[in-house]
Length: 516
Image (tube, rainbow, N blue to C red; front, top):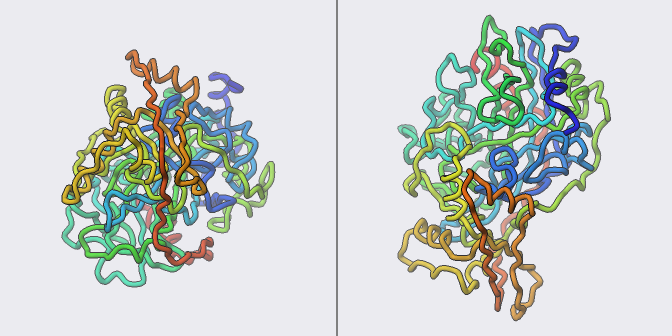
């Protein structure tokens, strides 16, 4: 590594900055409304091996299954608007499960994504992230409603942490986005302070101006150097508020508080479902039909001097970090930063899948699944291996999924959608990864080649101390059919005008001035 452990800890020594008594912040924008890459990669939770579900990733181009911070510093490009931010930011991908055919899934395009960097009042200094810091916020396995309810809570002294929400701006909230009497077991829960926000997916179309469905994820901001940068389960904690100042445990480092807001282009599907106040058609790539298992991952690839300068001197708010008065390294204008996934191939927009990527079954709100109760995205080797075995196919074409000779026979038309998804997930197709071109002739014969790196293969064989072997099935596709959805109105993607969302005051005044 470029930075040894000792020097990494030394770099966390307090820098020359006054104790913060005011709230400042700056929003990190991205140079394009497309992700850097997508696929079943997660170097925080599943380093060196295939992740348990599909992700969408922003940031530095050196992202991969074994990514570390010093790798990111050497990235050739980044999707961040600040050149010296080579960090990676990622979330589970959102899919549309067609109500007319519950065995059909389509990726929801990104509308745009922002990352807020909050520099809150603190009884100490706020310092740059150590290079390579890994963070996770949220629990991918839960399907239970949050204990705190539909509102947000970021202060552990005020109750259970609730850092995950969904925002759904609407022209009218009659009927409300969530059932008034919902306990969270079969529908989401309204935020008592904001009718446009809540826990879990809303049940109506988000038709607010420039604001489709938004995924909200807050991260803790107290770093424990003793745990180290890789121990994402123990290296971060939420600060408490003491006399209006954010306070970290003794010996911990107060870092920026980051907040993801990911806007998904859900209005493109508005003509393909009819809200009934009971169900909704969106599901996360981890199989979550509730929205409770939304989560985010982060690896810091910041040049520390650049981030420290922004912390100490920048308070540009929503206008963006690109407008900070001093930016070492300058502003990034590269709009073409994109990389191929380290594992598999990216699902295309308008591509119809017969299951979620990796065959992950849909669960929650009557579709099966229980909470992990772990409060984290981690899983032990046995459960991870079981999930990987059950999720063995990653076919990026609905036609391919239905044409494979080894595909399990589909359930009858009267079967539940979940039964069909489970059957598809158990199809004996090994770890084959397919990509069929839209231009491929219907008479063409293609052989799917497995995609895996030597490092991933070696890591897989030693996972959890269990000897494992990988068997690759060869799939011959004798015919293909391109399945296209009915055309939908094209939604013009553009960043919303300053403060048009009406959520800035909620961030600054409601959440961080005494109601964390």
